[in-house]
Image 1 (cartoon, helix red, strand yellow):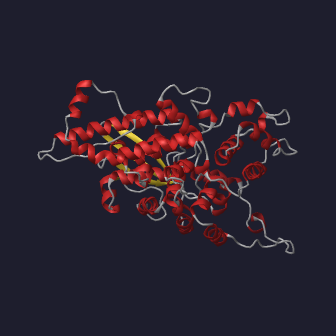
Image 2 (tube, one colour; image 1 turned 180 degrees about the vertical axis):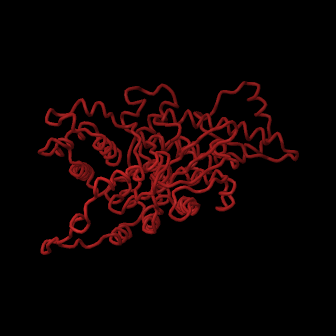
Length: 469
């Protein structure tokens, strides 16, 4: 994965910071209290560092190199890249690139954070924050931004209008000022704009089927872009199927034949609570959506297909529990899982492959940095099915083995090297001559790998047992 980061970005690549409107001190408070718990301190630090490159009251900074950013932040470039991806996913950064010969120029456009009201009204962000913080802490943070609404009912509005105070213009004044009033097309002026909420990439909800099956009581023209985005987001967060969503939308139609998104959100929330008896959904408890399953109408004919079917039918939370021998997954592990599901929009089945792969490669530990690197790569590859994730993991494993073999050959001193033990589905077919050569290597290598091999077998037994239960 580190190689992927370096392919995406180089120290000599140049960049310039811009901002979508002016950033204010209040934005800093929103970023600190609402966004930092979601993206972490390092991504927060990257945003602040880029913000610091803007001159006061300007929306464009000076050109710089990524090497200077590495020096300023005291971070390696792959680390900076991974934190940048988080900012993109959460809606705080847009990235533009221009290539000229061997030089690449990036524009990092900082997006202002949402207002507190927009943030707490956004289903994805508010639930993400709720799951990240404790209930008590979440309510404390929310209370901080609340203000008592002032009742103007007993007051009379006596505000004067512009023309009550200032005189009108004569035609001559307007004619002479017309040219000066225009803003040149090649220039811009800072404005006080707000950012956008993170977008949910739809690979799980059949929107065409949803629209085709809507009741005649729901006019098609009522399905605006805003309603479409709301439907997809609600389907993602609450796990609403197409048929249920059609009924929810029916209840959100107004007398004016439009769809009230607030009613839509409430309907989805009520549906979830009725179906699950929980106040808020936990993404790590989801299973692979039926639309993204490749084994739903097929009997497994191989061990690999059996594994695909098992990973499609178990939730990441349950998988972690089974791997731990029945013990509940730790809050830290669940937090890592929910992070990649929210930030990278990975489906539950793909996350299961990620857990399986990382644990085998990291001595049965769910290493946060390693998980985020792979998740970012898989998200960019738009991996949506378990089979696709396993194929990509197999390819990455092959590249890693080639790299490890090359590195080993380059050593001058002979050392016992730990052999990577991987499940059968990760292995590529090798020539028999190569297999014979491998068998001749030191027996100490096999002993070093025995523990990991035991863990691999235990993982497979865990999934088989879960399937039987």
